[in-house]
Image (cartoon, rainbow, N blue to C red):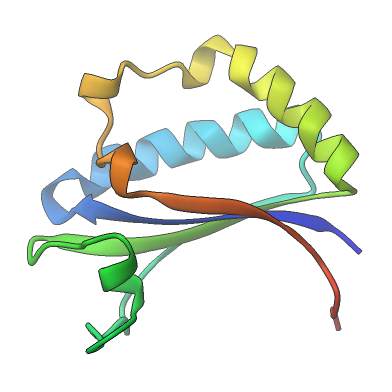
Length: 117
């Protein structure tokens, strides 16, 4: 079963076009280096919960939308190899000041698949 990197972040609504442009480039880079899939989703049913929720998890503001994304790989070992190559790829090196979201509020992690249909 595939290994999965998952991400949740908040993107200002007025920067969504910039984010999608960055995401398209990132997707091309990850796929060229061997990822099995690259998916970006924008929240359209992410209510703000009392204790927990997608918006709370990234401290989303009123003018931001939640983005949920994931990348799949053959294995964790392949993920580590691919990510090492991706991090050296000049196409994704964006200065922090130019990022279309606040990276400090992004949550991410690697996940081992246990059920898949």
